[in-house]
Length: 296
Image 1 (cartoon, rainbow, N blue to C red):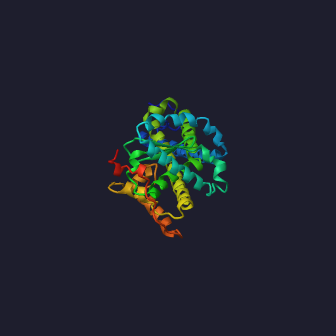
Image 2 (cartoon, helix red, strand yellow):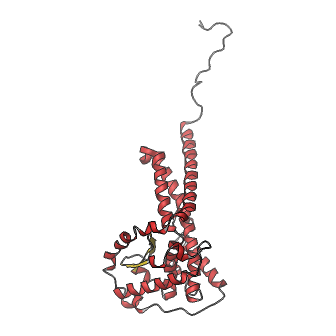
Image 3 (tube, rainbow, N blue to C red):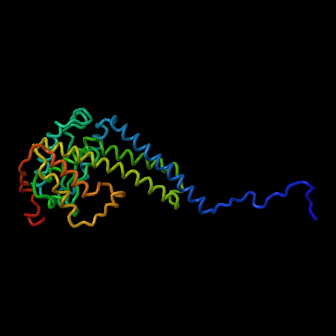
């Protein structure tokens, strides 16, 4: 016997239950939030990149001595003659770079030539990097990967270009802003599966900006080399040696901070081929010839 009056419809069962599988709903949520997060990261990164040009270099100079002192202990174990030779080359390249405008302005107005500090550190991997405050470090192992001064100059000019293009402060600012944004959005769920996925997505998005910076620095470094030597000979030396013997899959470029090495060499060689002038390579200074000194 029914308790419902005649003519009243029967309420369907499961009216408050979704027919979609809960995992599908979760996947849609993850994708939706992930897309929003990536858009946020991209927007913040672009905003930081546009605004960083208005940050005076004097702000970086305040912390430059602290960063420079961090290299002192590393430099105690390297050859003092090699360190002096590296600094001489670096200063010469900075002088040459002043003839290459930055965004239509004078490079010296963006970062004073006297602000640059060059460091040689005893690390086992071939590398060079620029930090805040115009500190540029080259590892001793990198010296073993070049055969001429021109090859080393391309690497040093690349780092000088990073500084003059304000990439260190842009990268640091992006990192701080993105971490703050992720912290506010994820809160205590940062260690959860969802938080981990979103953080990874944000990091990969930032890597694309790092690759853009590397390409910009390569382009400017070639201009600096041309201004200093009058030609681009040897510009591909280090990057060519870096690619030799490496099983670098092209798809890995997506999660690398540097462009694919083969593409990088191709870009540099294309520029070398288009150069109006050709010239002889300058021998590497004796003090910087690590291989001939027994790899010390």
